[in-house]
Amino acid sequence: MVVGAGLVGLSTAVLAARAGAHVAVLEARRIGDGTTGNSTAKLSLLQGTQLSRIRRRQSAATAARYVEANREGQQWLLRYCEEHDVATQQCAAVTYAQTPNAVDSVRAEYDACREAGLDVEWVDKLDVPFVNYGGARLHDQAQVDPRSVLSALCADALDRGVHIFENTRVVGLTGLASGHVMFGERCLDTERGPFRADTVVLATGTPIFDRGIYFVRLHPQRSYSVAFEVPGEIPRDMYISADAPTRSLRYAPGPTGDTLIVGGNGHTVGRQDHTIARYDDLVTWTREHFPGARETHRWSAQDYVPIDALPHVGPLLPGYDRVLVATGFAKWGMTNAVAAALALSGRMFGGKMRWASALESWAPRELTGLPEGAKINTEVGLAMVGGWLRAALGGDGDLPAEGEGRVNRRGVRPVGVSTVDGVTTSVSAVCPHLYGILSWNDAERSWDCPLHGSRFSHDGKVLEGPATCPLDIYDRTETAAAERSSIS
Ligand SMILES: Cc1cc2nc3c(=O)[nH]c(=O)nc-3n(C[C@H](O)[C@H](O)[C@H](O)COP(=O)(O)OP(=O)(O)OC[C@H]3O[C@@H](n4cnc5c(N)ncnc54)[C@H](O)[C@@H]3O)c2cc1C
Ligand code: FES
Image 1 (cartoon, rainbow, N blue to C red):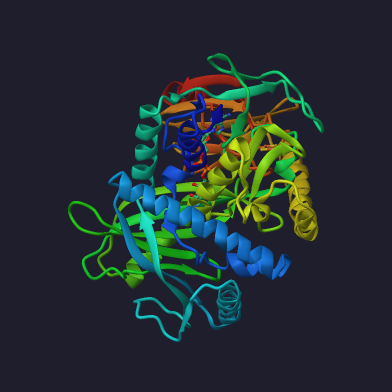
Image 2 (image 1 turned 60 degrees about the vertical axis):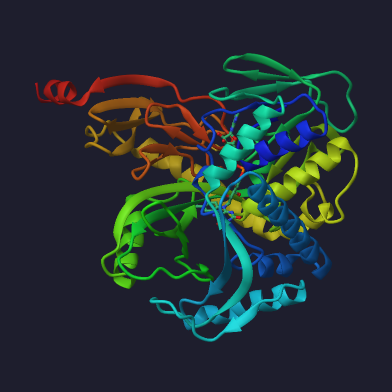
């Protein structure tokens, strides 16, 4: 049984069905609603400054195995796209410095790549219309439309007899033993009833079950993307800056011409006021460097950054292979997710990938992430205390204007009040995962948790993150009526 129909889930399902297994996929929302469907989808082995980040914590051999895993994921996906008529574009990947201060970190990435056998070149000045101080460039990488990949995988899975259930959120798991092998089946509780399985693959972005404490081993990061029609030339390489605020660029071919996609401005989920400003900043930057650029679409998504810089792929709990996870791709999951699916299917059907040790879910190398883990979990603690203090000091508050939301207090209860499409809704502002106080995301009109990244719609439905339960709804009022009653 696979939980989650993103790139990990669907590629694992296809591989398992190919191996002769009976497979079902349970997806909480619709296929493509998760991170994969909203990814920039560069299929690259030069991944921003990821390899130097790994290298600061891990040995050269581990970094080389990480590259090998990603190369295998990349090659598998490119072959798959070719066989299933999904268009990909071959192009170079570039990590560049926006300021002189970032040149050293780009150099470190260049060195880490060369050490791991990647044939990167150094470019002193990029031929692009935005300021740069040079970069590292790796030729022969690729990009793809992630939704086309998911569609192809879904059709292939269905053809192979995989059952896919959309709008089926998993909310619980029984039959999980810790530490030692347990016989019998696992039972997944869903909103549509129980499903029984021999083996469960949790491909849910961050794992939805707390056993394994992945929520303290990962850091949820949200980023913004805007697509533009541009009158002039769009650079053909895929770019990402080494320094903040991140600028990530690629082109996307379409029936009426190419589109420019600009992304970046990431932050920890739930810890940013006025997220709309993050989009506006990307629009301003793009119009400055690509005069006449006209915005066509905007969207945001999140991914999970592991404390030791390497993905976690393997058993949810040490030594127990009946419940497996794949997470921690740090915004480089298009190749890592496929590598994860290959590693998991190897684990389930026999055979081990040479490079799999670099992605293991439980390994002593994670100790190298302890300082980072201490830092992010101190910040989580501060976010928890700050949220409850602000809620305690909050009052009844005014009605929020259209598109706005705020945390008020009713007695001792923190209540999230928002107005969306003329309806004011009050929900519990306490995250059902581990009781963080939610904050309003005005760009997405959602309630986001600053602790581990759970997100909820304005009317309390779970969108993503480790939480599986919705928020309690206290009341819903049409705003016009509410305004009249508050005046009288
Ligand atoms: C802004 C952004 C840009 C990115 N760009 C790139 C890039 O250029 N190159 C690259 O390599 N990587 C990129 N990434 C990272 C990459 O897209 C992700 O790492 C990858 O798509 C993750 O795939 P996944 O299958 O783990 O997660 P998802 O695609 O999120 O799939 C998880 C699925 O599980 C479902 N689910 C969750 N909870 C439940 C539940 N309780 N029950 C049932 N189903 C559930 C979700 O609805 C979702 O569909 C980017 C990430 C972001 C945020
Ligand atoms: S996501 Fe963990 S407390 Fe909200």
